[in-house]
Image (cartoon, rainbow, N blue to C red; front, side, top):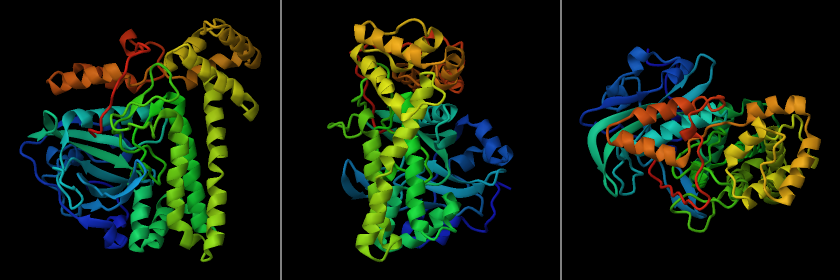
Length: 469
């Protein structure tokens, strides 16, 4: 059997067909497995004898039981609503893990679909390796994320700014239901069906609620508030937080122009297309709340037939976002600074630390590590910084703080320079750097890390990311 499943058909197919299109992957010339995630395969309960197959993972040859689809959705891209959908991704199937959790198995770069909008439906090896590595890094950091089961090269060339090696990534997600999916469903008049399905799949605790759609909005908000706080705690910038890139499952999805901060700047932007800094580091929480408001708009008629009552109830939920976000943020940054039970009263101390980081142009990850390793030594050169350090020492419990900080502060993240070097070498035929980096980022809290993987950038370095994935 190619996977465990409790239904005769893919459950998403039980939804109105306007939400998807039947489509088969376009065969490729010469598929070959480049990467295969055996650990993930085991977690999902997959049979490697079946799944570790280039014909299956390229979409060239699928079991008869599979009935693949491309999903429809809208998306606010930089604030402007657009018709989107899976332009090069094809959902192969759903499987149920040994723990009873349902997952989507999707091929990215599997060929054109009705939503391709002039694109070729393909992907290059470099961007697929980038998504594989960063999603595995996020998983190792304990941050909810889609994951990658495999990367397959296609034996074909894709034309971008320069010719690239063609590749297909197998993405695994709790689902691919996005805020943009709800926007599309509302536009088509099928939002109730989608909402009921999403509740059953992701928030079964809402089924018995007398206000199940309020519960859906509330639970989604809670999951996103914590997710964004987790991003902030490791210096992760998503880069393209459109409504089609916010998942109802609460997972990080779509690793396009994302990157991790080196030298700390609150308004850091990496994406080449984010000219106004809409999705900068300091704006990720407000943008998440904005996206959730777009979700709430689609649910109003379900929340209450009285529009004014529905708006009032949805607004009440949305206004909780800031409190939920800062509760998670204070907890996470508190632990990074050795506080086991940080309180709202600690937030000014935590925020001041970040302000001092920026003023002294210090590396985000390495400064937390420096404090972890030598808490008695100030990391700041200014009088304000030394004053902060003394107040921090007075706040922590030295006997407990070190262990708390060691568990909360990764020594290694996928740094921009080393990631770019590893992918460039892999594209040129030498995968040794990539394999080494992949192994290292899967152990982010290891005490011994080769120095080249912890070196920060110079304060004036500017790294630019692109939407290749």
